[in-house]
Image (tube, rainbow, N blue to C red):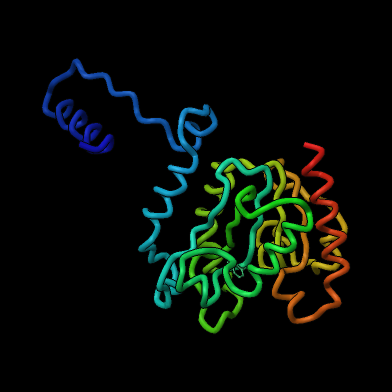
Length: 223
Ligand code: URA
């Protein structure tokens, strides 16, 4: 019997008039994580399964796989991208196409690997024709990301591109300005840089992105 079913059974006995049953509600996931009494990777995995058939917005219609996120559940650094593309939709893994290869090289350049960080996206299902996610889609998916942030509890967040920067920092300021300052999100230091796909399209973003990554690297290795 699952834990949930067991609690429901106890509730049922109480309702049936058996008074000597004292039910302590199970801890909400995030509290349990904070108390260090659960396996974060396991919880993230279970949540990804739970949301796999999400119907909260129209993006579910083009979904082959929900791309929940992946990496180290205890990561000090969390990267947040925009949303899955076609390769990610096919595989269920974040950043597996050309942008993903570049992201791997960028991480390597700052002495990190994909296995050390946690990678998530603003929306978990591919927008049609890779258009930007719409406000209602961002809003529908945001609770999943907030939950991931609470569970992983990173000490640094790096936002990759305009969509995550605007969604998380609730601004419409340009990346070229946002990247010049360090921000805070729920007391977590946040850096902003260009999306890897932008670098693939236009090499002019390479130098500023490298500057941003070096700031993230210095912060990370000072933790
Ligand atoms: N671009 C993103 O922002 N996220 C992915 O997972 C892949 C490409």
